[in-house]
Image (cartoon, rainbow, N blue to C red; front, side):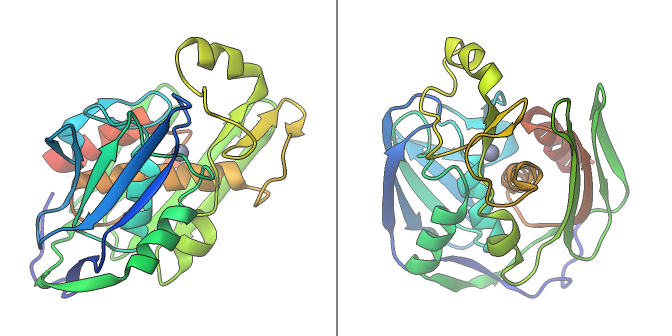
Length: 271
Ligand SMILES: [Zn+2]
Protein backbone atom coordinates (compact mmCIF):
# COMPACT_ATOMS: atom_id res chain seq x y z
CA UNK A 1 0.00 0.00 0.00
CA UNK A 2 1.30 3.41 -0.79
CA UNK A 3 -0.14 6.84 -0.66
CA UNK A 4 0.55 9.76 -2.90
CA UNK A 5 -0.25 12.99 -1.09
CA UNK A 6 -1.87 15.51 -3.34
CA UNK A 7 -3.31 12.96 -5.78
CA UNK A 8 -6.80 13.64 -4.51
CA UNK A 9 -7.67 17.08 -3.32
CA UNK A 10 -11.27 16.07 -2.64
CA UNK A 11 -12.48 16.94 0.82
CA UNK A 12 -13.76 14.31 3.25
CA UNK A 13 -17.51 14.23 3.80
CA UNK A 14 -20.13 13.35 6.40
CA UNK A 15 -23.88 13.96 6.60
CA UNK A 16 -25.59 17.18 7.66
CA UNK A 17 -28.28 15.64 9.89
CA UNK A 18 -28.82 12.33 11.76
CA UNK A 19 -31.53 9.93 10.60
CA UNK A 20 -32.94 6.60 11.71
CA UNK A 21 -33.98 3.54 9.73
CA UNK A 22 -35.60 0.38 11.03
CA UNK A 23 -36.68 -2.92 9.59
CA UNK A 24 -36.16 -6.65 9.91
CA UNK A 25 -32.82 -8.39 9.51
CA UNK A 26 -32.56 -10.92 6.67
CA UNK A 27 -30.94 -13.58 8.84
CA UNK A 28 -32.67 -13.19 12.21
CA UNK A 29 -36.02 -11.99 10.87
CA UNK A 30 -36.04 -9.69 13.92
CA UNK A 31 -36.59 -5.93 13.96
CA UNK A 32 -33.47 -3.78 14.21
CA UNK A 33 -32.87 -0.06 14.17
CA UNK A 34 -29.94 2.07 13.07
CA UNK A 35 -29.41 5.76 13.79
CA UNK A 36 -26.90 7.31 11.42
CA UNK A 37 -25.07 10.39 12.74
CA UNK A 38 -22.44 12.82 11.40
CA UNK A 39 -18.84 12.24 12.55
CA UNK A 40 -15.70 14.39 12.59
CA UNK A 41 -12.99 14.49 9.90
CA UNK A 42 -10.70 11.43 9.72
CA UNK A 43 -12.79 9.53 12.30
CA UNK A 44 -13.97 7.07 9.62
CA UNK A 45 -17.13 5.00 9.84
CA UNK A 46 -17.95 3.37 13.18
CA UNK A 47 -20.83 1.36 14.56
CA UNK A 48 -21.95 1.72 18.15
CA UNK A 49 -23.77 -1.14 19.90
CA UNK A 50 -24.41 -1.64 23.61
CA UNK A 51 -22.07 1.25 24.40
CA UNK A 52 -19.19 -0.27 22.40
CA UNK A 53 -17.69 1.49 19.40
CA UNK A 54 -16.69 -0.78 16.49
CA UNK A 55 -14.71 0.85 13.69
CA UNK A 56 -15.74 -0.31 10.20
CA UNK A 57 -12.34 -1.79 9.33
CA UNK A 58 -11.24 -5.25 8.26
CA UNK A 59 -9.62 -6.04 11.62
CA UNK A 60 -13.08 -6.08 13.22
CA UNK A 61 -14.60 -8.69 10.84
CA UNK A 62 -15.89 -11.64 12.90
CA UNK A 63 -17.81 -13.62 10.27
CA UNK A 64 -18.11 -13.72 6.47
CA UNK A 65 -20.80 -16.35 5.89
CA UNK A 66 -23.71 -14.89 3.89
CA UNK A 67 -22.75 -11.35 4.78
CA UNK A 68 -20.04 -9.47 6.62
CA UNK A 69 -20.26 -9.22 10.41
CA UNK A 70 -18.33 -6.59 12.38
CA UNK A 71 -18.16 -7.44 16.07
CA UNK A 72 -21.74 -8.50 16.81
CA UNK A 73 -23.36 -6.54 13.96
CA UNK A 74 -24.19 -8.60 10.87
CA UNK A 75 -24.87 -7.60 7.24
CA UNK A 76 -23.04 -4.27 7.31
CA UNK A 77 -22.01 -4.41 3.65
CA UNK A 78 -25.05 -2.90 1.91
CA UNK A 79 -24.99 0.21 4.07
CA UNK A 80 -21.21 0.52 3.75
CA UNK A 81 -21.48 0.17 -0.04
CA UNK A 82 -24.02 3.02 -0.09
CA UNK A 83 -21.72 5.25 1.97
CA UNK A 84 -18.75 4.35 -0.26
CA UNK A 85 -20.78 4.90 -3.42
CA UNK A 86 -21.66 8.41 -2.24
CA UNK A 87 -18.06 9.10 -1.14
CA UNK A 88 -19.02 9.52 2.53
CA UNK A 89 -15.98 9.13 4.79
CA UNK A 90 -17.11 9.76 8.36
CA UNK A 91 -20.21 8.48 10.19
CA UNK A 92 -21.28 6.91 13.48
CA UNK A 93 -24.13 4.42 13.31
CA UNK A 94 -25.88 3.40 16.52
CA UNK A 95 -27.36 -0.08 16.13
CA UNK A 96 -30.11 -1.71 18.15
CA UNK A 97 -30.34 -5.34 17.05
CA UNK A 98 -28.17 -8.14 15.69
CA UNK A 99 -27.86 -6.96 12.11
CA UNK A 100 -28.60 -3.96 9.94
CA UNK A 101 -32.12 -3.84 8.46
CA UNK A 102 -32.26 -5.56 5.08
CA UNK A 103 -34.96 -3.15 3.76
CA UNK A 104 -35.53 -4.11 0.09
CA UNK A 105 -32.33 -6.20 -0.09
CA UNK A 106 -30.38 -3.53 -2.00
CA UNK A 107 -28.40 -0.39 -1.12
CA UNK A 108 -30.90 1.99 -2.71
CA UNK A 109 -32.94 2.86 0.44
CA UNK A 110 -29.65 3.71 2.21
CA UNK A 111 -28.57 5.92 -0.70
CA UNK A 112 -31.90 7.74 -0.65
CA UNK A 113 -31.73 8.27 3.14
CA UNK A 114 -28.08 9.44 3.07
CA UNK A 115 -28.79 11.87 0.23
CA UNK A 116 -31.85 13.20 2.07
CA UNK A 117 -29.72 13.76 5.19
CA UNK A 118 -27.37 15.87 3.03
CA UNK A 119 -23.74 15.06 2.22
CA UNK A 120 -21.45 17.84 3.48
CA UNK A 121 -17.77 18.52 2.89
CA UNK A 122 -15.39 18.71 5.82
CA UNK A 123 -12.12 20.49 6.50
CA UNK A 124 -9.64 17.69 5.69
CA UNK A 125 -8.68 16.13 2.35
CA UNK A 126 -9.52 12.52 1.54
CA UNK A 127 -6.52 10.20 1.85
CA UNK A 128 -7.07 7.54 -0.79
CA UNK A 129 -5.12 4.29 -0.88
CA UNK A 130 -3.24 4.03 -4.18
CA UNK A 131 -2.18 0.53 -5.24
CA UNK A 132 1.44 0.36 -6.28
CA UNK A 133 1.36 -3.17 -7.79
CA UNK A 134 -0.95 -6.03 -8.78
CA UNK A 135 -2.34 -8.08 -5.90
CA UNK A 136 -4.10 -11.45 -6.12
CA UNK A 137 -6.19 -13.46 -3.66
CA UNK A 138 -7.67 -16.83 -4.59
CA UNK A 139 -9.51 -19.74 -3.09
CA UNK A 140 -10.32 -22.78 -5.20
CA UNK A 141 -11.75 -21.47 -8.48
CA UNK A 142 -12.53 -18.02 -6.99
CA UNK A 143 -10.16 -15.10 -7.30
CA UNK A 144 -9.84 -11.32 -7.12
CA UNK A 145 -7.05 -9.35 -8.75
CA UNK A 146 -6.43 -5.71 -7.88
CA UNK A 147 -4.47 -3.48 -10.27
CA UNK A 148 -3.12 0.07 -9.95
CA UNK A 149 -5.63 2.37 -11.68
CA UNK A 150 -6.40 6.09 -11.47
CA UNK A 151 -10.09 5.61 -10.68
CA UNK A 152 -12.32 2.87 -9.28
CA UNK A 153 -13.45 0.03 -11.48
CA UNK A 154 -14.81 -3.48 -10.86
CA UNK A 155 -15.17 -6.31 -13.39
CA UNK A 156 -17.10 -9.22 -11.88
CA UNK A 157 -17.96 -12.65 -13.23
CA UNK A 158 -20.10 -15.34 -11.63
CA UNK A 159 -21.22 -18.74 -12.85
CA UNK A 160 -24.35 -20.53 -11.63
CA UNK A 161 -24.65 -24.19 -12.51
CA UNK A 162 -28.29 -23.73 -13.47
CA UNK A 163 -28.39 -20.15 -14.75
CA UNK A 164 -25.04 -19.90 -16.53
CA UNK A 165 -22.56 -17.02 -16.54
CA UNK A 166 -23.11 -13.36 -15.68
CA UNK A 167 -20.51 -10.61 -16.05
CA UNK A 168 -20.63 -6.87 -15.40
CA UNK A 169 -18.13 -4.05 -15.62
CA UNK A 170 -18.64 -1.06 -13.33
CA UNK A 171 -16.80 2.27 -13.15
CA UNK A 172 -17.51 4.50 -10.18
CA UNK A 173 -18.53 7.96 -11.30
CA UNK A 174 -21.16 10.58 -10.76
CA UNK A 175 -24.51 8.75 -10.19
CA UNK A 176 -23.21 5.44 -11.64
CA UNK A 177 -23.35 3.56 -8.32
CA UNK A 178 -26.89 4.78 -7.61
CA UNK A 179 -28.16 3.78 -11.04
CA UNK A 180 -26.23 0.61 -11.93
CA UNK A 181 -25.37 -1.10 -8.65
CA UNK A 182 -27.33 0.22 -5.63
CA UNK A 183 -30.75 -1.13 -6.78
CA UNK A 184 -29.45 -4.72 -7.22
CA UNK A 185 -30.91 -6.93 -4.47
CA UNK A 186 -29.37 -9.78 -2.57
CA UNK A 187 -30.38 -13.15 -3.98
CA UNK A 188 -30.79 -16.75 -2.97
CA UNK A 189 -31.88 -20.08 -4.37
CA UNK A 190 -35.13 -21.70 -3.24
CA UNK A 191 -33.30 -25.03 -3.17
CA UNK A 192 -30.83 -23.88 -0.46
CA UNK A 193 -33.37 -22.08 1.73
CA UNK A 194 -33.94 -24.97 4.17
CA UNK A 195 -30.21 -25.52 4.70
CA UNK A 196 -29.72 -21.81 5.36
CA UNK A 197 -32.51 -21.45 7.90
CA UNK A 198 -31.22 -24.57 9.69
CA UNK A 199 -27.93 -22.65 10.18
CA UNK A 200 -29.78 -19.59 11.52
CA UNK A 201 -29.44 -17.68 8.24
CA UNK A 202 -32.03 -16.22 5.89
CA UNK A 203 -34.92 -16.46 8.36
CA UNK A 204 -36.17 -13.01 7.38
CA UNK A 205 -35.65 -13.54 3.62
CA UNK A 206 -38.65 -13.11 1.34
CA UNK A 207 -39.60 -11.85 -2.10
CA UNK A 208 -39.90 -8.41 -0.41
CA UNK A 209 -36.16 -8.23 0.28
CA UNK A 210 -34.39 -10.61 -2.10
CA UNK A 211 -34.32 -11.84 -5.65
CA UNK A 212 -35.45 -15.45 -5.30
CA UNK A 213 -33.96 -17.83 -7.84
CA UNK A 214 -34.69 -21.46 -8.63
CA UNK A 215 -33.02 -23.93 -10.94
CA UNK A 216 -35.50 -22.78 -13.61
CA UNK A 217 -34.91 -19.03 -13.24
CA UNK A 218 -36.14 -16.07 -11.19
CA UNK A 219 -39.22 -16.60 -8.98
CA UNK A 220 -39.93 -12.87 -8.48
CA UNK A 221 -39.27 -10.14 -11.03
CA UNK A 222 -35.58 -9.14 -11.41
CA UNK A 223 -34.71 -5.42 -11.49
CA UNK A 224 -31.97 -6.13 -14.06
CA UNK A 225 -31.38 -9.24 -16.17
CA UNK A 226 -27.95 -9.44 -14.54
CA UNK A 227 -29.10 -8.39 -11.04
CA UNK A 228 -27.08 -11.10 -9.18
CA UNK A 229 -23.68 -10.09 -10.59
CA UNK A 230 -24.48 -6.42 -9.97
CA UNK A 231 -25.26 -7.33 -6.36
CA UNK A 232 -21.92 -9.14 -6.10
CA UNK A 233 -20.25 -5.85 -7.10
CA UNK A 234 -22.32 -4.07 -4.43
CA UNK A 235 -21.08 -6.57 -1.82
CA UNK A 236 -17.45 -6.19 -2.94
CA UNK A 237 -17.67 -2.39 -2.68
CA UNK A 238 -19.22 -2.69 0.81
CA UNK A 239 -16.36 -4.96 1.85
CA UNK A 240 -13.71 -2.69 0.27
CA UNK A 241 -15.12 0.09 2.46
CA UNK A 242 -13.51 -1.85 5.33
CA UNK A 243 -10.15 -0.52 4.13
CA UNK A 244 -11.24 2.50 6.17
CA UNK A 245 -10.25 4.87 3.35
CA UNK A 246 -11.20 5.28 -0.31
CA UNK A 247 -9.11 3.29 -2.78
CA UNK A 248 -7.98 3.82 -6.35
CA UNK A 249 -7.81 0.53 -8.20
CA UNK A 250 -9.22 -1.85 -10.80
CA UNK A 251 -10.64 -5.05 -9.36
CA UNK A 252 -11.25 -8.17 -11.42
CA UNK A 253 -13.32 -10.65 -9.43
CA UNK A 254 -14.23 -14.18 -10.41
CA UNK A 255 -16.89 -15.97 -8.30
CA UNK A 256 -15.72 -14.13 -5.18
CA UNK A 257 -17.70 -13.75 -1.96
CA UNK A 258 -17.36 -12.04 1.42
CA UNK A 259 -14.56 -14.33 2.70
CA UNK A 260 -12.35 -13.64 -0.32
CA UNK A 261 -13.28 -9.94 -0.30
CA UNK A 262 -12.07 -9.79 3.32
CA UNK A 263 -8.80 -11.52 2.33
CA UNK A 264 -8.26 -8.94 -0.39
CA UNK A 265 -8.81 -6.07 2.04
CA UNK A 266 -6.28 -7.59 4.46
CA UNK A 267 -3.79 -8.05 1.65
CA UNK A 268 -4.15 -4.44 0.48
CA UNK A 269 -3.67 -3.20 4.04
CA UNK A 270 -0.48 -5.24 4.52
CA UNK A 271 0.96 -4.83 0.98
ZN1 LIG B 1 -25.28 -8.49 -0.32
